[in-house]
Image 1 (cartoon, one colour):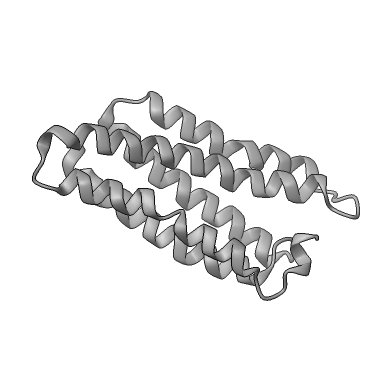
Image 2: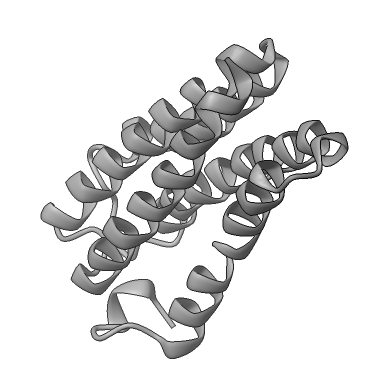
Length: 151
């Protein structure tokens, strides 16, 4: 089934997407808990998961381009864009802890802008854009909540 045929959103896709917020939320809650010995591990887990999810978000565009029924004149640009979030996420994990979370936040915001552009162009369904709005707010909020702990 082509993604554009999911006009109102597949319940499974939505459920899995929202369940994907659990590691962000749980990780930040553990990081803020009164157990300082768990803080670094929780923040590392959130950062690694963030990088993985950025790769997943970029892969949405990769999959869309390679399965498109017609040649997209901007397909090559979208493929380049598709790998950008994963590279940015990887780069974020190489930084000192004070740089990791800010770069991940930037990555999620840039990925959101890319997804919005694709939705506006009719390349991704409207429900996906609305879902990504909500997911991005939660992810960026949890990553922002980590900033006082890394500075």
